Length: 135
Image (tube, rainbow, N blue to C red; front, side, top):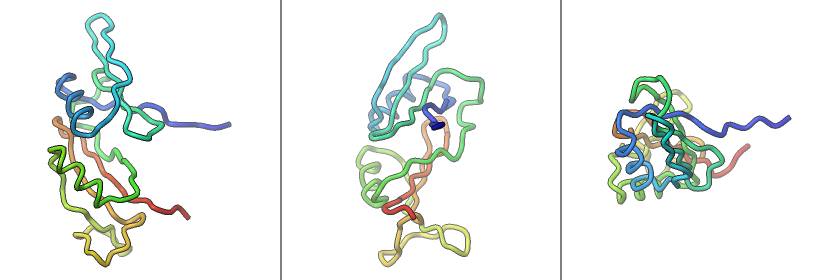
């Protein structure tokens, strides 16, 4: 049996503001924007992903979700793209094998070890990891 993660609920305080952030800043595709009674929820999917996010429903406190992770094949290019789109993003980090993060250098092999971090307007925390080859 195959088990797939298809949707993650991301708690937000303002659905329209969050929709604009994910659509316009992160280039997520709006799959649907639905009003069901007094509840509006929006499903968005990152480019190339099989898993979507849903904003506007759920019981978690806005900004309480931490550790969401996207994977790219070039974290430096992803950093440049996010900055160009107006996302406040930290510098590219290297996850050392000894533990912890430090600023990445040009000599670092970032495969599996290169990261950047940002938050959405509510403070939900995202990481972007570079994976160019899997073991």
